[in-house]
Image (cartoon, rainbow, N blue to C red):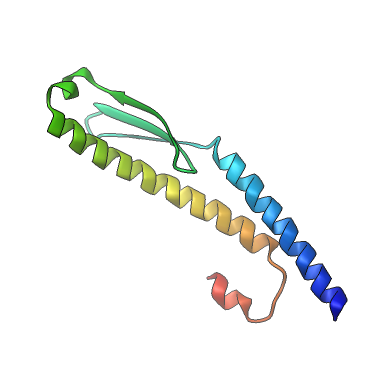
Length: 108
C-alpha cells in the first residue's frame, strides 16, 4: 500500500517538473497578432508576456483610435496565447498523472 503511495508521489513530482519545464518552454513560443488593416502588430509569448508592439504612424494622430486598436489586437493575441498555454499544460499534466480510478472523469 505505501509502495503504491510512494510511487504515486514520485509520479506527481515528475509531472510537476514537466509542467515547470513546459512553462519555461512556452516563454519561447511567440504568438503574433495584428489588426485587420495591419496598422498595429503585437507579439507575446505563450505565457502572455508582451514582447513587442508595432504601431503605424497614422494611428499616433488619434488617441482613441489607437486605444481601440490596442484593446482589440491585444485581446486577440492574449486569447491565442491562452489557448496554446492551456493545451500544452493540460497535455503535460494529464501525461504525468498517476492512474487513479475515477480521475478520468475530471480530466475531460
